[in-house]
Image (cartoon, rainbow, N blue to C red; front, side, top):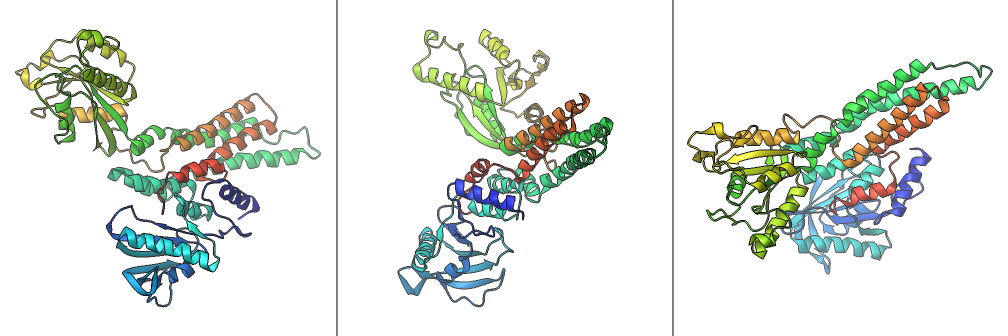
Length: 492
């Protein structure tokens, strides 16, 4: 690694909370320890150590180990931290010797029974042994094991983000995409674009070096050749930018609000979409007094479904409409859900005429993603020709129209078909980096068209290159790294 990269690594750890210190060769001097399994009791709990003294500290926490071999699990006894002459649990210890480990350092994992008392005793014992021996041993910060893996070059920043996505996955499709990203799918897709950009940068810089000699007035690189080089980098980058909406939807999901007048069947439809009884349903209008939220997966997309209180009057008319305070608050919450939703389902009782309030509501969402649902079609006695144009007829009682509604929801969200595109953008950070790279290429193309000096074109091209580098972490500012890894759980 070059000295510039080591400087960046050192700056990151000096400025981020929980960061460690570095030796002159760029390796970490501190050993970190943490419980790597979720809080609470379980069948198995794991304590993980990483750093130059990981193996030495781990050997002081257990008894009965044999000769240490890379990747070989050994049955050991966990020593009582208050009486080293006895054990308090049986465990399996596995050592991964540097550099063949997740972090690139020596990593030791001790898998004991999932008793919080035993796991915390091992962590406390590791810290106490470090203090006793004068070693630099401390608790790991959130995501610090993965941060060390990134700094050691074991994975790039898009892969590190995918680790968090895989842990947080709520659907199988999310897990599949995260696994692809962990395998470097996005990095591999970006590589040819960077190569095309580097090719035109190299060509221009070489031409400038040549022109700085005796042939100052000779145009070494023709404008047409520069334009072709910029186009070669720009077109695949534009295709990559187009993947963001679907990638973000698969990663973050969407909020869907069921809005409409009282007794339109919102809660019944809510329960039917969830395929379980979650919201209370009665024949009395106004049963739902507050928003009710539940999660479900549809087409691999995690959705937040929001059942709302029925809207009886326009905002600002609640007190004069004879509505009690509890229901007023419920309708205010409904308005908030309406404002925040990615998709609005306007629920109408198909057996009734459209009210003035419903007309106003439809007008208010005209420019937003929404679906008009005419519910209770089981009561129409087959008179489906009475449904409004573009409306979806449903029955929460019989289930009629539910499949059509589910398909329409996915289409409105832009999630129809497979979302699991290889190497897609799925975070705002990634999208902003690609947008900045495209802006730089656009500026370079404009400068070339205006016959500006090659130095100006190169400035814009280098801006694009830095933006692409930030995707994988080569030139990412340390404050961005701190934010990314702070979202991880401790122990990962």
